[in-house]
Length: 508
Ligand code: GLN
View 1 (cartoon, rainbow, N blue to C red):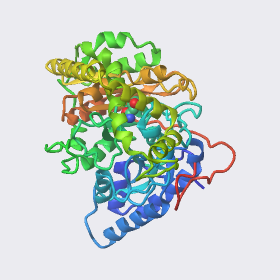
View 2 (cartoon, rainbow, N blue to C red; view 1 turned 180 degrees about the vertical axis):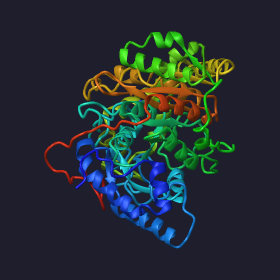
View 3 (cartoon, rainbow, N blue to C red; view 1 turned 120 degrees about the vertical axis):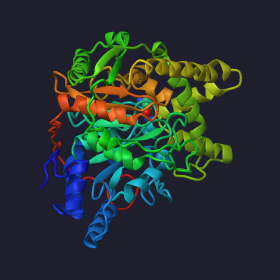
View 4 (tube, rainbow, N blue to C red; view 1 turned 90 degrees about the horizontal axis):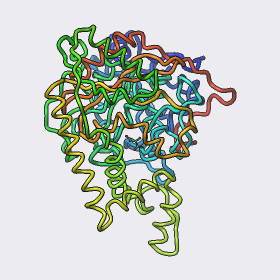
């Protein structure tokens, strides 16, 4: 019997090598993974749907390929959870919204195809804030995720299910999406490594759009090396996404083995001085010291426009969301609540299908784009965004990577901020600038707070320089998170087998 939180699965590279070498069969790993989810997920609620049948079939196919002497891919037999805003053929995809309940996409997202081609075993769909809008997972229409380090705390958002599933050792790794911080912030809250690649590095074909000038898919994993292996599989040109970059993919796994001697690490002093939380301050100082003692040079840089990040983001993201979410009208996907005529059907469907945060964003965005206000809001925000890009360009003339906290505090309690949107939005102040500038940024754990909660440190690099992020964050990990401590969470009393599976929409 698997105990909640017990590591019956293993990390990405460990599983892939064990399966390739024949030490474990993919089927054995998939069965252990499913047993782990049954035991652990009632406490976490990190999954909205577990595809047992699909996972076992994919694992059996990997074993059959090995038996036939075929070459196995870099993720052979690796169990992975994917955020439920990524389309999976024939498998429910809800964006944690009632409006998409019952929707089964007819096709796989690009990143899902990449995972399958590499031999990965997709185990199920992870919980998120509705349409990826949120920082705590409390905006999921199917109930929040619990942080495995402290079940009364938020896992972060919006990829909270992905982060909690990885931290809780239910899967080897997971995919998330990041529009303003949604892989990095939950990564930091849950003590896992998460990277948002450069805008254009990973195809968004099949990622349900939130804010198209910002959205990127990114992996979350237990270690920097595991993350590197995943990103190498996910990256590359795809003609089905017009923003996909035609550029060679870096050697991310090899970059993990480079040392940081002479790497110039930029820090923004006044930004650090504003961090009130003593644990975050201390862990960021530890990371700076670790990089310095590994031979990096620390230099001071400034990003004066970064302080407008929140204002820019909350004009641009809702504006784009209001347009992207117009397609959910009860005609083609999911929920339909019939009214007396077409307009009434639209209205009743959207009123019943969207949750309060999604409605707030649609209204804010529609307002910001309306006649007479476009120049004052959306256009102005885009202009400030150009200034922010210039700030980063100037900083990168002096350094190779910029280091900052990922979040202002460690994981906050569920319910603490859910009544106050502005407080919730402030959880993203450090992750927004890289998103707005389209730059790659990674969050990696830099130790625990006094209360035993993980603290993340963020590194940002120039566009398409993900290799630097892997080199630098691996040095931080080596010094401060080498043994990758795991949370020991306990399942609450009650039903331990209440994991949705097989047919139907999410059971919760
Ligand atoms: N927390 C931010 C928001 O609520 C970012 C979300 C995201 O990156 N998807 O919009």
